[in-house]
Structure formats: C-alpha cells, structure tokens
Image (cartoon, rainbow, N blue to C red; front, side):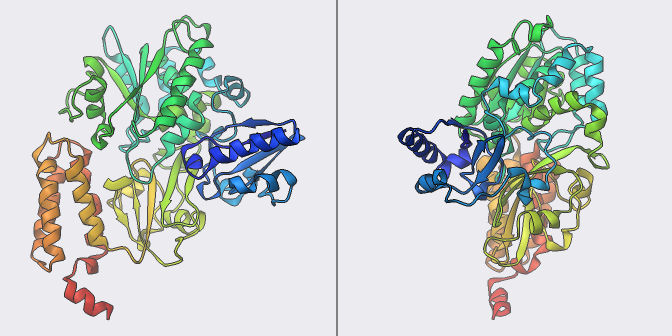
Length: 508
C-alpha cells in the first residue's frame, strides 16, 4: 500500500506535514506494510491536505484530512472522494504541462520516466538546432509569463546570435498576487522544468542555465536544487546530456524578493549581482542578456511545457486552444471563491465559466462584482465581460491582459476606488526608480485617488491623463500596466468613484 501526502507549500500550510507524521506513527503502531510518498499537489487547494491511498492498483482520494482524521482514515471510516481524475474540478481539465504534478514523487527520476518524462529530451538530442526551433515554432507556444511573445522566435534569435557563450534563464520570480503555478511545478514536478531547459539549451546552443526564483519559495528552492543534483548524477545534465555528447548544466539562484525582478532585464541585473533595476531596450536580452551574452529568458510554465511538445509533437499541442493562443494554460483561481486552485485547460474557455462553474462562485455567497486577471497589474473585469474567451487577443480586445493567468475574484462588497488606490500604492512601493513615469507617477496616482475619495471629482480627468503618461512613458510593464487596474475600475465601476456623500445617499 502507498499513501500519498502532498509536500506542496499550500498543503503544508494546511497541515500536510502533521498528517504525514501521524500516518507514519499509526502505520508503525499497527504494523501495517505501507509506504508514505510525499507528492506534489493535484491543485485542488480547498481539499488539502488531499491524501491518496493506493491499494491493489486502485488510487483513491480523501480530503481534506487533518491530523485528527488519520486513525479514522486507516480504519476505513472516512468516505472517499473516489479517483482524483473523477472529481469534477479535475475531470474538466486538459492536463498537459501539469500531467504529472501530484501524480508522482517529485524527486523520483524513475517515477518521472515511467510517466513519460525524458521522452522529449531523448528526441531532441537527435535533432538539429534548426529542427528543435522549428518544432517550438510549429507548436505555437507563447510566453506564459505575461507578454505572450512567441517562444520559438525568441529561441531562434538566440540561436542565430554569434557569441562564445549563451544562456537559458528561467524566470521563476513568481510575484503576482493570486499566482502559484510556477511554485507548483518546481515543488511537484521539477524534472519537467529541467528537461525543458535542457531542450532549450540544445536548440539555442546554450550550455548553461539558471533558475531565478524568490527567497519566499524555500521549499521550491530545496526541491529544485535536489532535482538538479539527481538529474546531473543520472546524466540528464552535464557534459554529455543523455549520452549525446552535447553539454547543458544549470543551477538555482535566489533573489531578494523585489517584484520588479519579475521583469526580464531587472532579473538579469539581479542575477549578475547588481541592483534589480530595469534596463533600457534595445539591446534585447536575446542578443545581450546575462553578462552581455545572448540569453533566452522564459517563464517556468513556458519551459515546463516544452517536453510535452517534443514528446507528443508540435501538431498535437497546437491542436488545443483558440486562434493564436495555442495549447493549454494553467489558470490559478484565487480570492473570494468556493473552489480555489489550479485549473489547466485549453485556451478558449469563457471567463464566466471559470468563475461561476469551475470556481463555484464566491465563498461568501454574495454576487461577483469584479475579477482581476493577470496579477496586481491586471485589469478588473465586470460580469458583463464574462463571455470573453480566455485568450491573449480576446483579452486584449477588452483592454485586459492574461499575464500569468492568475484570477482573483471579488464580491459586491469590494470598493473599487480602494482597489485602484492599492494598485498605485503597490507600484509606488515596488518601483525600481529607474524611470520618472513609474517612480513619481505612482506616488501622484495615490495622491490623486485620495483627492477623488474626498469628493474632488475634478481630479478624475487628471487621473486619466496621469495613467496615459505612465502607459506611454514607463520603461517596463510595472509602470506601463499599473493603469490597467486603475482605469478598468474607473471605467466599469464609476459609482465607486463618486463623492462619499453621494455614495452614502445612494446606499440609503
């Protein structure tokens, strides 16, 4: 018998370590022959700790399980949820990138291979650089970190650049509120990220890679570092990748927690040991990146998806999605919802379906007022926009962005003027200070919103002008996208920007 208890940070925060310890104690006391496996999370956070028991080839789920439930669980007195794959939230997913997450032991390379791991890298070792790049281009894979730039074009730029050294840098500085997909992969299926980075290295001619992540992710850092050691020991990394004669190795670097280091040039400065400030572009990192050398900078999900493309073929992956938004997207559902967690699905599902059906509506039972998509720089979408399909161009048409695909739900008690102020304040605190529109504009934005809150409606045109300056003049997305939540709140919820006296009268 195998008993799976997640070692994911979210599950641990909800008591998974205590459950695992109690299970070990009870198993020993009862003389039961059982193995406890610490897996990743299946992504249904409201059911954590989600314990799975595999017996006679059948794997059944139970959750949420507390330390006090362990005896009853082993006695068979707790009703099973059935197979995870049959739980409605999970059954409606299309799991490609996250196919193994929660299914396997994250640090077992044998488990990884048993469930299809390394097939993509084995194929890539026998391909030319041109063929590897073409496969990525044909898949339609776009950056999953925010901008949605075609991954194959970025890789090709690095491949064609002439330099004695090239690098693959994984942007794992997951700082957006309501996002956790990168952490889930690093903690729950680290070898898929390693494999994806190795394929990228082979395709671009890069022999060294770095995973740049946050100091707030100690578990992910520990798992990634151990996984890299295991992969290196097995010949997956090093001077002779899978016996191909080709070289690629990698390591983990930990940042100090600045939000702006999620921007690729600021990340590169930090990686070099410098202050995390934004670089002006051009030159592009693909030509002059880490230490001035050609560098691919991709998000965790982009790189972790590459092995799927090479194992199943570009055409298979491109068959999923909508328009130019090919493949699947791991959508992270958070905020005021009944069922929060990670939901991987093909692009195209309407936002309303995600919020009302998948997430189950609000946890409070109150009507949904707004949904912020894309982190603290994402626009607030009104329920009138819930028929918008989840796709890059479709969201752009709504003056919104997908970003890292975190969605945060608010009920009708939310004050959208306060949320707009928070966006400006967040920008003011997190600005690297390199450019004036962001550094000063965000401070002025807070002041202007405070004037509006006090009843100065004449400050609204000033706020609009200020946002236009920030969009047009900021060096990076921090200042350039902060106006998205501000202006969307003003556009869709003008009643929340009325003077306090008028709002009070309306409420009465």
